[in-house]
Image (cartoon, rainbow, N blue to C red; front, top):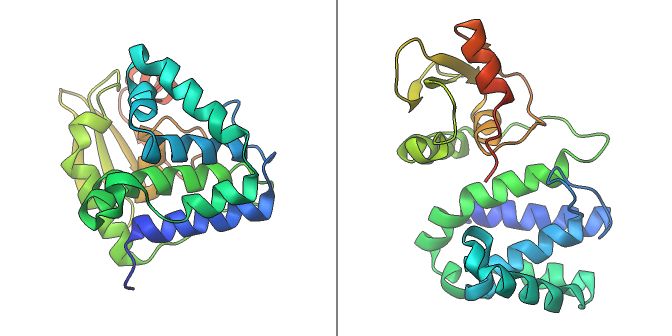
Length: 209
């Protein structure tokens, strides 16, 4: 495989976006496929708009950039999204910043479809996702309300998402663990173990960005 996982997930998301159409629902509350495509374009191609995604003082720039894209034809927007823009044209930047972004948003679109099912990624891709997850796990687990450990279902490898005694252990496929930590509800096969009250708190926590 010559293309990175980030590039392949981008292509798959774009293919699915064309297939399901602009009005298709997603797992991002209130967003259609068009909204998702616009979000990704703003994030990559409008620096001030991208800042507004994470910093409220810049939210006006995000809204204006989004409105500009919303006026454009959907298929043209998807075609533009197929190629990285801005600093994301650089392979290392694309891999660091877009691997999770496109895996998660591809699943947001996939899992809003009535016939979705979990998919099996290449083992090398799964290992790469696990390595990236564990490297940034203190950040990805920052909103967890209780000490938490994540465990790969396939290998049994573990990593600490939030330090503390009597942790909750979440076992599952790597993609499912990532989706859970990104605040997604449409996960499959996760097993939670630990003190009942702590498990309930972790399962019900709002972990979205």
